[in-house]
Image 1 (spheres, rainbow, N blue to C red):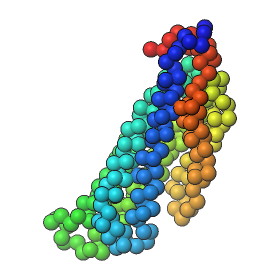
Image 2: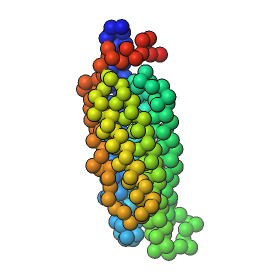
Image 3: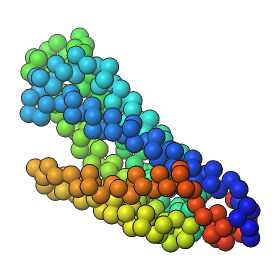
Image 4: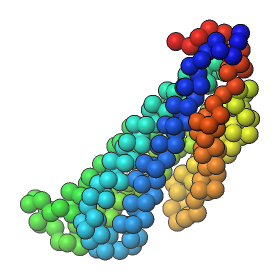
Length: 238
């Protein structure tokens, strides 16, 4: 089998790398940046004023997060095509675990929409005082944050079969697989700590995500060893 038997696989690899990198700014904007700018922990009134003064930014955070989840769907399908020859069962598991996070993340954004509904002051909420509305808005912001930790369980779990497949592939560096498994552990530790110890503020995943940056860069710049990939997939992929 020659290295040119599957000429399209590096296009798939670069597509996966590009999608992975494209996902990151959308996720950062929706999950990290917007809350850091608009949410003031422990001060519902100031948070409410900041959200209503920057409503477009608040809405853009929601839209950005949803776009990131849509990108994740196409990303995991591209990675499935790339890694299926290594082990089909593990590749299917990777897809299932990644896709389970998508509906959780989508439904979780209802909490953001509830915040906007409360603060926009529709007529049927006039029976509530401003303090009550602000307190309820803060509650929905806290619920949205907790929902992110729930989705993060699957954002971590899908990296476990992905890391295994990369490690066993032979056409990608084994170190990338190890780093992806470490990233998986970081997400799971963060989610578990938040659920078990609500006052735990440390974020392990901010130090363990390196593999999620290096893998897409490698795919985008270097691609895969086509000859080794071809030895696992003796017939052109459909």
